[in-house]
Image (cartoon, rainbow over all chains, first blue to last red; front, top):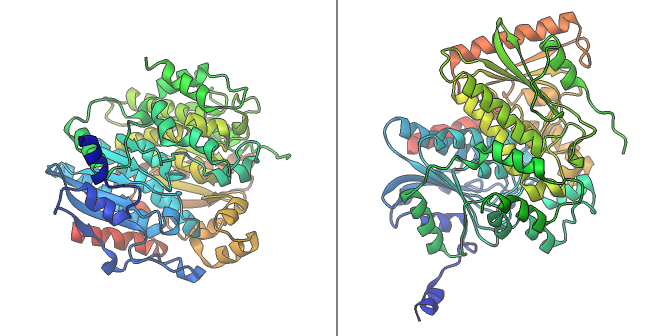
Length: 283
Length: 268
């Protein structure tokens, strides 16, 4: 009966907003939000374009603890402008990671968790979004030298654009079945390469290539977790308890170049062929 | 669709390295050349068109799967070679990249992870003390620029209508933001981060220097001397000022980026 009991008491993570997600993951009572909505640091660029800005710019940054360890968490609110990153939201994430690295240099082992629900650059702030994402990436690589930087892609937005590169720089990456992880959004590929290359309305096709289950089966993420807030928190605590000493995936060019060298790129790709390729050397 | 492939990256790479031979063991789309800068060893990198690229969506100079991972390799070699050296060699990214590769093969095989391989290499080279300079001679678009150039300590751009930094091409950006291209251009005219021209980009404070040249497609001796002198100054400036990206935050158009960091620090 314990399974049934667990099911009845499970709490969907995907359905939570950014602030609720932060509170569900950090140790109870430890959350302290930085630059909360009352700080009113909004995008300086949206209103001139007739778009209502949001008082937190769609990013929640919170300090707290995880299993008693000092932690900073940044959660992107997928409901605001598709989770896109503009100047302010990007600076909140980059700045928080930069301060966490500084903590480590001062002897405080602050780790980081990034909740990534984002289409990437906010095109209404285009070049400043892109610059901010470059700074987020720089800060992940810097902090990762000291402590884990754990990315979580839960869905439903997924993680795209420059932020998918940021996800791929994390020391550990967790996904659910709802998650999608890919560089280019389906609409953009269809626009650039044509509908034969990528049909943005064919959702089963898109999930089969970029969905959480496929990414996990291909070894492109570290964990495939149920849509359950408690399960995700326990997974985070487990990683922090035993981070392991594997080389970050973004440093594994010898392995990936070897695999790509053996891949027949002539036929169009499908999910099964990619799985077979990436599982081939994991056995 | 007929497009004239840009040779700017290749031409500037050849000019800056005095036609030195490239390193072997890389795809034809990534040129890796070791040649001096300011009398010291340096590594020059350029992603260039390869009409025979095995990946058909990466034949016009796009940064794709092979290019991303191979940049990671080229940078890791530099870091390893200078691990015990007191003075780390400089890295010059010659940037003329129209976009990342948009394709089904790319998404399926994880192009995001390949580009992370490149970003990782550049960021770690910078953190290890290698001066990293990006020289923009053509397009520097979106994910391609993130992977090849945007982790540099100093970004130098040549003044030319063909030099462009942006997050997305106009047609796609219009589609995603549910605007027409005309509407997009109207906003771009009054919102500097949305603009596609170099002066607007320069106003964001991300460039360390912009330079005019006579012949951008195929540099002459004077052009080359001016650009080389600028790269040497950039290298010296980095060696004096350190490895981070703080130099990008000074412009009036980045006031919000500074304010966010100040408030975060105060509330930390």
